[in-house]
Length: 327
Ligand code: 8YV
Image (cartoon, rainbow, N blue to C red; front, side):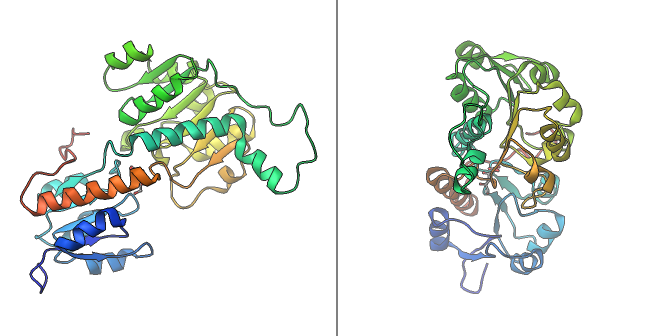
């Protein structure tokens, strides 16, 4: 509670007006800003009832301790929450919320866009043209991979994976997937087949990652996994950078052992390894999966509705299960 009798809500970096406006009407709202440092955040959180975070903000014991015992909620502006120490939240009775559903279409559409852009080398072709290096039409120039009839492997058949599978099914190929459990509805609707990871990697023309990051899937796509993929196949990652060994991927692209890659996420954002920047047939975007007007506004609104619900004594709209086995 602040001197003005209002509960204090701290936005670690920035919340879009679609959410910030509602919070500012009810609470004392403080924002660190996009450039805020860890130390500035530690100075900002004492006495906060809620913290609004995003994947770039590490929510750990130290930060929760600095906020103090009045902290009731961490509202993450993202569906992923690998930036949050869930057991630390659980120990302190702090609720964690995320923003599922509202970004499903946006993220799946970007994954599809990266798939197409990588298959046809659209960014590299455009760079050549803009760089004044287009010397004339050449029948051998920029020949790419055709997606019609391609087998698409979806690693992680959750909400975003399913949406991506539906979009990619329009190319008419087969859908393979890995998942914790069978998806009978998608099997019936898309003819999708659940297989093990190795069979997915060796049997797909396109492999797209849609898993939540976890310690157990760090470098899930390493040099061995890449070696199972065909030399014309495409790897797409809009999930988390930690799941792909960037250097192994860059070597495979440089040596022609992999067809192309479309990546929106990186291991140590915003740093992108030079090897990837230099790799041929790699399309790289700066973590824009959910960046549509509709999705980002809906995410901000959902963050605000979660904060309001919890601080006004109700139930969170989209709580994260904090138990160790929870997803
Ligand atoms: C971005 C995401 O993190 O929701 C996620 O998990 O990775 C993306 O939505 C988000 O846009 C940045 O806050």
